Image: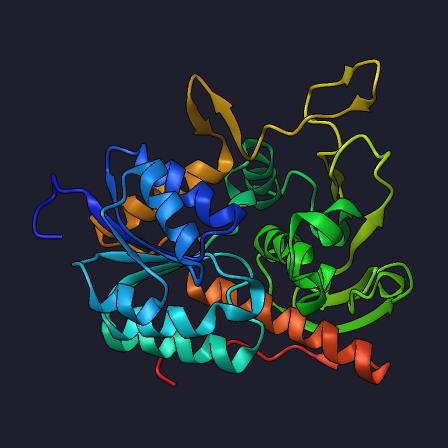
Length: 350
């Protein structure tokens, strides 16, 4: 960016459900200009270009990076495919906003951090739950000592079976912990202001395996933090379709002088029709007067502010790395049947 009044010029890599949401939100934002988009499928590229008036399109992220002048790149590919585009974008001296999880290996996350430091560019990981007003308020209360010292916690994020069977096409390439639990691990690390030390996990493969989707139905993991607190994380995606919401989300922290409960199963709205009873979602993302609003767009907006103000984002690459390290330990524990250590943060000079 050459001037404070200019828009942040963005490229978006990955045009699935989330990628299109990024395209729509940024194409409507006065501080952003979506200059280029990329997907492996040419017809999808052309569709998004036409829908959001994007001037440039590519079917290879390297071509996108070699093309128009960009200030920043959004990586919205499937979980296991974040590293390559993110590394190339940083090496080309673009800021990067990465969909959660940052990467699916600590080694890859560490390489991205080194690349960002070398290039002098920012990484923000899209852990958008931090922008939910109730979660932010909880953080302030916990930090102020309102519930005393946190002792233990519990967090679940469970989806209906619609998600791994229809919503995404690559469920067999990830797990519910990577796809869902990453948000909760980020929240608990933020709430506790402490680092995860070790993890012990259990999982079951029955329902989805019976549908030839090679992933876990449910994972539970207990993680011990440096503060002494321990937290149980639950992630599943085999709830029946009859559940009144696509996702069931709940967070609890118990302290020496109180507790915090954050229940997002029902987000203030209940609806019944002759077909079904439901809890429509709207806190993270909802269309209001023709624009997408909520915590997710606010997360995206703050990435623009971080670039324009030349400051670290609210969720840094280091934060994303620690979530990846925790999830890597959880998945090692699933394989070994033992408690596994979480890779500690790497000093910035390393």
